[in-house]
Image (cartoon, rainbow, N blue to C red; front, top):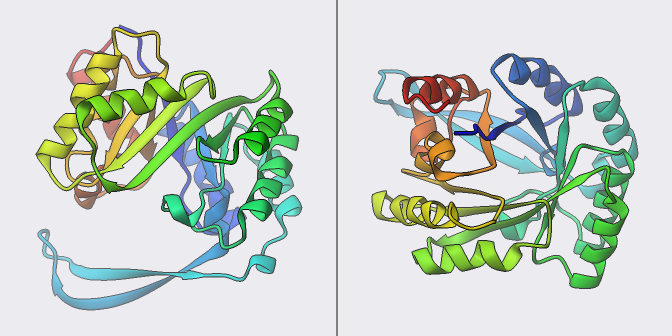
Length: 262
């Protein structure tokens, strides 16, 4: 049983914070680190709320504040990131329509992706719904040096097993890997994602399926058994990750050992 690659999404809202998180990500077991460029256009405001969590700690409400488009020098940021991080890099610039934070127009975002590809990252994330001619140009620009993740992030309810499976199959040929992420409300949603991944195992598809919400980490934890090619994790830790469908990279590696996914 072949273990999937582990991609750790770097924490931080500045270039410096992301670069500082990269060595930690590698130490925890990252094969690839994901740089979320759209996070650069945000700042974090933490406000203490009333009450305590299940662990007896005071709850902290995190508020994300958007920045103006011209607040970030894209070329300088990408150059610094590329020269500072030694691990293979996946660059992502997620639009607000798919849960991201990029504040500009789609035309502006495509320009950011062009600059990102020009930096020769190991991977680039290109959403499957980018206008076809523009997306084809980006894929051509990526060439053979930069691998393409064809991504889909749904903010709606988790679809049926057959719809999830079809989403992945329809996106084959649009990249080297298909990434599909769905919003989960509970176990039934998570099981649909899990079952779809299990069905895809018998196909020739190269995919990464996951959920954001309760149970969303099931397909990550059991990714080797489900034939997944890539799993996304974080350097963050805490009991709250399970409710978000996320998992710490080190915890993921330990789970694979305990489950004897080798």
